[in-house]
Length: 470
Image (cartoon, rainbow, N blue to C red; front, side, top):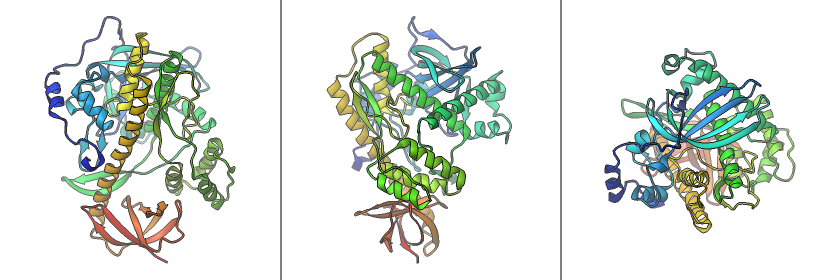
């Protein structure tokens, strides 16, 4: 982390500030009281930094009012303080197989600024009505007090929604929560259908999830998508659109999440051609979305590999200043013009910035950041997001090298994830590990499949070397 400009520890001044925070802030008189609603959180099994809650309220015309409560982190971590300075340096929490380095101290992110179960907390509520066709027909934003009635996990909710398991205990413990979740799920699927019609790209990517037995790392298995994750994903996408539009309508600058059209579109076209499909010569999100949907139906087992190849070729997103009235750069992968990050302020600093901009707009006050400062922050947040990803990838490689160090000489099926003058990299699936092809890489490009043999590992440096077979 130090080598990549990240602070692994909180500075002494931040520790002193934390010691002086004894409770969550009290609500002002003009903050709405929504504590009685059936709010719930859905996150990873081991997540403790809960940023958002959701609740659904069906309307007579078939529409559903969806409320998303976002933790009011700014109420505790004010701008210019030592804790804010640390958060603005790292800009993100760093999640590794070895340890989590939180952007905010755990006493805040998992307690006082967290939408923890059974606790009254301040929030910003993104209130949107989704009509029967899946379009957002009304939207507003306001501050409110909320209480999380059920802390839920993706896998448990997904298994229950699919009819494969009983309802998780927190669902059964809250009257009406089962029906509440089914309404939320159905509404999220409406949003998903609209997103796909508009050309949003749907991927199935395999993220490495560390598996331990008695404190020993025993596997890196894929953390797969499911219906509960989609519920949160499509609610958050819609909420971030609402926030972007709100700031624009109130004449405020904003930090937008941008993903430009892919520079390696020609390689994506070639991949499609190799699978019997045709894409236009210039980047076209709607055409690519249709191709991906067709491939997911035709070859679901191979779709994660295709997804990985396309994700690599599209490239990474970034943060950019959006001045009011100027055209938005947009997000190619989501097929959106107006999109920001606002729903995870406990773990992403751009979301804290957006929260402060929102609160200023709500109060009809000037933006708390000058445009030049926002531009600098956008570049810094993009840089640090990349640095955090490098740290996470490095530790993940060390973990994979540890798992593979006794398997030298074994052969694996792999997909090419990177190919440039710097080298060629492939990813295996069991375990989920990425390594460099040191011999036989000639002619390989992103998306190709290859049979490789494990030749060398170095746990300390995270090196995994393969040679191509055949």
